[in-house]
Length: 230
Image 1 (cartoon, rainbow, N blue to C red):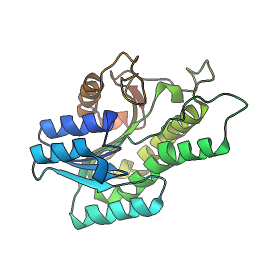
Image 2 (cartoon, rainbow, N blue to C red; image 1 turned 45 degrees about the vertical axis):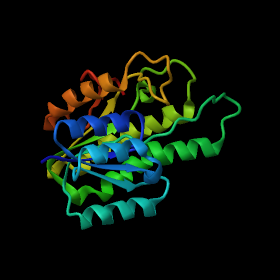
Image 3 (cartoon, rainbow, N blue to C red; image 1 turned 180 degrees about the vertical axis):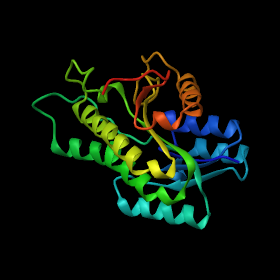
């Protein structure tokens, strides 16, 4: 049975990714900051007994990452898929009023957290495993033409570099690491006006993920599989 870990699994794309992985028969570790409040995950666990394990994870606290690794070690899990989905977006940023804390927090969650979590899980990755870093076209330097959500955009650009570095670091294990933009999705972060439903975005990403080859490692892809310029 394939085993996956999804961070930020309590809502939005992380919840939908967890739901679709379970539906196709995978075993999932769903990580989120407050498992006790994750009612949707609780319901999923009841629907898929023995195949969903919910554990706490706060990417702004390295001790939380260490605890997650200890728990997965105790469960003797080896992951075929890791989806670094957890992220944050600071709303309403305006040039001249952007705070250092917003930049630091965004970097800690969106880039540093994904890198450190993957590094910590390296020994628990199965041969040929796939690590998916959920990025954004806002992190594309080549595509940037407006001052929109600087903290988010800068941290996602850093995540893209983390993707390339992780692809190099994990190459000898045969692990494939890619950054994937889910598109503009109708979630709490994406807003009600987004054109894509979470179900459609996740289904598209899973099709791409299932067909990834070692030569794809280190790439930046759209949810359709097309290459996004760095």
